[in-house]
Length: 276
Image (cartoon, rainbow, N blue to C red; front, side, top):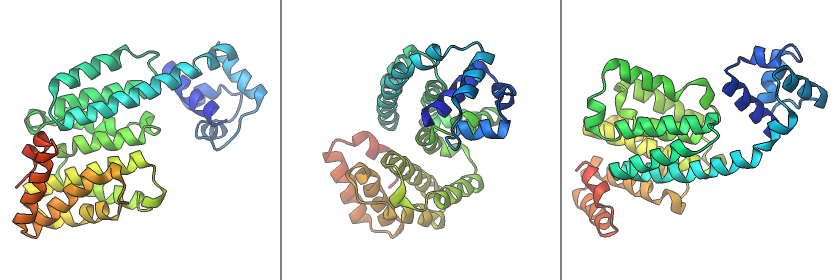
């Protein structure tokens, strides 16, 4: 039934309806809201009545299940490539991936947000681009991150925040980081992708603080990265966490050794962006 709830939510968003309009008086709005969140199971008759109210046949409702599932996998693969390209400042690859995302159909809420995220990161993935944004543009981007229809895209939202953390003031960024750390304290219960996204966010925030010599603000995110499990997927951000700890403690030789190892491993583009 969890699929039914997610599909109803996606359908409602595509139709541009509120939950009250979608429920159409068939069931209460509070009950319908819980159906979307997977907290309540909807009866067959009520489900069919809601579809009928919006001229949607059951066949039409279910026929795109496999298509949407395959599209979602394709988007996740493309977004992982996109994040790597953004971190390596590969502008040509970024544009190619955005074009590939634009071709994916149907345009579900998940795909629309992924495309929106890609366009935002493409425009803001380096310091020069961020510096060119005016206050109005920055406020629009901030609203996108926490817009209502992104609740199911938790991983993407964190990655987006990690890539544009520089548009926030230090007070705003610190408030966000503190709240995120409190929300995701139980690291042993987190999805692996969420852990990777969180580690990237913590490192990017630490980098921002270090560049502005706000060393005291680096402690909390670095401790959070240390708290994460020593899984291979987290190796790179764990190494960067060690690097920033060495910089803060003025261990210049140890920090240089880390940079040298990363260069030998082929991470030249990343090393160029690292503070020294």
